Image 1 (cartoon, rainbow, N blue to C red):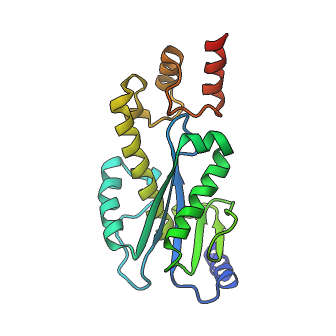
Image 2 (image 1 turned 90 degrees about the vertical axis):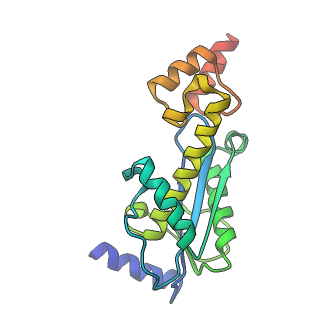
Amino acid sequence: MGKAMNQFTLDLAVAPGARYVAGVDEAGRGPLAGPVVVAAVVFAPGRTPINGLADSKQLCAERREALYDRIVQRALAWHVVSVEVEDIDRINIFQATMLGMRRAVEAVAHVAELARVDGNALPRGLPCPAEAWVGGDARDRAIMAASILAKVTRDRTMIKMHSTWPQYGFDRHKGYSTPEHLAALAQHGPCPHHRRSFAPVRERLVATVA
């Protein structure tokens, strides 16, 4: 109760009277391959909430897919951004995530009075007032919805990637550092979708050269 009241007070301080809030979340900061994906979702105030929303990590793939369709149908505005591996390697994963967040918020800024971002960092240059909310993907419906859109979009990307690069098992581990993925990386070396700025991939490249 105390946390909710403190956050409500912060909302008023950041954007007095804000009712149209863009929830913002990402998927894919940690994997060794594939994009980092960011979504922003705005729901109309007073509209009946979507049942079953939760942090995407707490939902099975089938449930996330079903909720994805309901979110895009019911949201007042939504947008998903994929920041590709080239940008991740060029500016680092943190800055790539911030870039994706900024682009996602810009796309819904025509209706959003406030951006509420999951985590403890905010991108610079947002077009509306914003706040970082640690654990927001378990506490705020718009952030939950954004986490689902980001996760489903990224999973679809990795499954599609598997059709071209089946030797890595992207359809199963989605690019994360699992024993299966590390073994495939050691056997086959990195593909163009691997993040060369990440240590396991970089170390494999060095070993190949040596």
